[in-house]
Length: 258
Ligand SMILES: NC(=O)c1ccc[n+]([C@@H]2O[C@H](COP(=O)([O-])OP(=O)(O)OC[C@H]3O[C@@H](n4cnc5c(N)ncnc54)[C@H](O)[C@@H]3O)[C@@H](O)[C@H]2O)c1
Image (tube, rainbow, N blue to C red; front, side, top):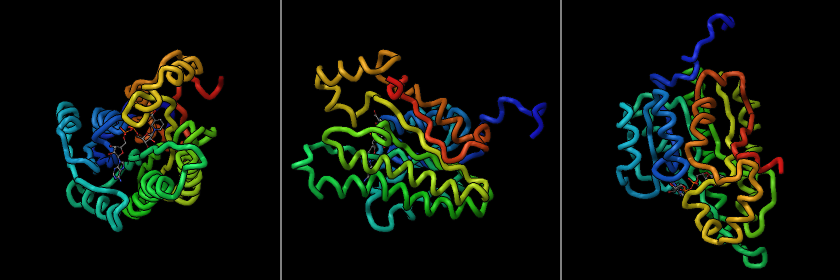
């Protein structure tokens, strides 16, 4: 593209179809609405039954939403999710791997009962979904995979060995996929959110000492609002980022610099 051809339509997702795992709650809901506002239709696989809130947001901006109840850790489920999206919407152009869990415990008590489910959701499901989505993306000649990393991709964290391991793993897998899929016009990037007020951070937020310690560490002097992630999502899902590949975009109010 010549510089004179550049326009803000490079941020448009009109005609695109996107999957957002965990799109019924928390950050996933913000990712879904951001993509819909930019023009994409949504396919939302969810562990819990549909409660209508994400649908109201998506349809409220004139986009289509398809829902599928799915435990992404079940054998064969990630492939079914991708195939179902293609069957119902016609393609999978964007995949946002947002589903995740965080189980906390002291190292002495952190056993396989906590480790295994976290690896299954945070890492293996994201890998399997990307694996199957990338086959369609290769055939259609374009695709965007956005993985959701964390500050724990870079930092340690007490009581969270599996969370830190899976989120560091997400970064490694993002780079490896980018390296191989870039030649097919598929961009694989990650967003690393800082501290956001959702269900996954409820335990931390309900502890006043932890809440204060975290807030004092953030140059922006506040926890993130899910809306703070919406611009980064549209950027990484759109042609505006076609030469951005293998990047981890940190959206943390500056936490990492302090
Ligand atoms: N909230 C934060 O501060 C923060 C910070 C960094 C990264 N993240 C990451 O953002 C992502 C979204 O988290 P959130 O903050 O919205 O929390 P959340 O608890 O609201 O969302 C997690 C979603 O994952 C889904 N999920 C869990 N297990 C699943 C399974 N087996 N199959 C299908 N879906 C499953 C849940 O149903 C839920 O919709 C996670 O990957 C999380 O690690 C969150």
